[in-house]
Image (cartoon, rainbow, N blue to C red; front, top):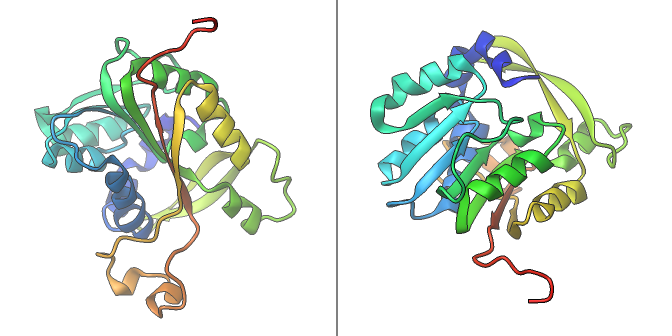
Length: 242
């Protein structure tokens, strides 16, 4: 599924994104926690959607650039952010339209699982990061697919589709499952140093009425949904024999 497929339900997705457990109280707080102090940092939000993460980063003092493959999503982001961010429509499968070593951080929030090939996008992310810069991402946790459909081959990189409801309206999203070792291989193979793999709990600010029952009851502290990772571009590139 291309990012422009979001055009047909962009407004519904944006509405859902602002209040849902998975987005508003789980994924976005976790990503912001991994970013930490954003003051003065130049951050690229790759696959920015309608811009809710960028809005949070701008409030925290970041200089933010974002792109998305969906023109409708970028229109919504422009309405939300005005001139506070640099925005554009771009296909993540194509080379990034930025100079080498431009960004302190590149954030890829729930985007990479739409792509069959990670090698080229991750190489581009490494290129546009400054030395010491960070790549921070969230993706569908590969174990969830195995729980939902145990008959599938966990070790195969394979496309699949799922039905969703956004603000009361149905939609179908198509993803690429890849096993955990392939996620790690792609990140490390891009030249980035993997620093963190995390499976966090929902934000402490999550309203009790939107919590999964087993967490609201205190039986569990977290649930399995997304995998979060952080990697760093080396400050020095070592050459063989040097």
